[in-house]
Amino acid sequence: MTQNTDINPWDTTENLSSFNGSFPKTYKTKKVKKGINPVGKKTQEWEAARKELIKLFEAKGTTKCELQLEHCWKTKALGFAHRDKRRNLSVDDLNICILACNQCHSTIEAKPQEEMAKIIDDIIAKRSWTM
Image (cartoon, rainbow, N blue to C red; front, side, top):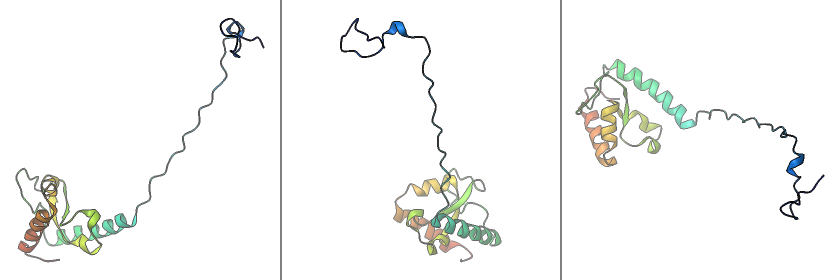
């Protein structure tokens, strides 16, 4: 091995004049694929409750947005709006909800929690049926 002493006497790299033009082969490491997170307990509870809510609302004839605010989508993109944030709900609270389009749901979701709960409670009280 010839030392590169042309520029720096302390440099121990090989002299570039001995470079043969090929680089050592590099190997890419394979990415380990992460699996999809399993469905958690809260999600399983919500999916079971949601199936029952869909059947109940259809049986009672509630198939359009119950809020009917400005810019309402009426029968499009319907979902359940709860009186509290989902992260704060227990299994028993999942059934306290109304049917709302995404537009109306987003509108009341932006309000303070107390005001949102009052709006939903008022709509539930005005229904012709109870849960």
